[in-house]
Image (cartoon, rainbow, N blue to C red; front, side, top):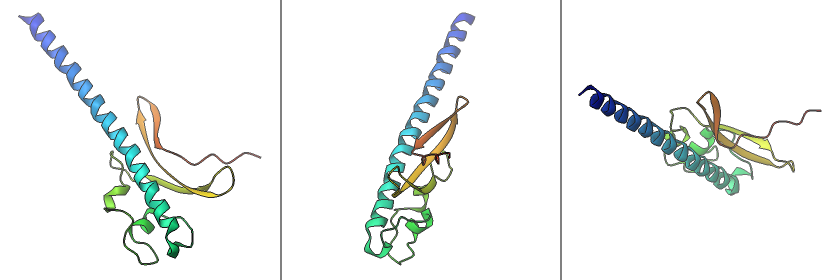
Length: 126
């Protein structure tokens, strides 16, 4: 009877581990979708005539634009990643020198840092 109990425990543990992997995968996919939505909100802000063709300085500008329009986000929690931390945001120059918004989330997975979204390029060393 004991080998059967051990087998049941092993199968249950494997099922839990797989369930955890599925949850982590779903969170990663949600993070990528959220980054795309936040980038779209930044672009909508940029093309708004009242923005002066500038990107928002912070997520706060998307939530409450300084020029008084309605929020570019549905909910204040849109800036929170699936792990409960605020997405990171930075305006940085692209290779051609034009500014662009970068939005990302970082998470430690198996001792390695995973990045969801896109970090700004590292400054070139002189």
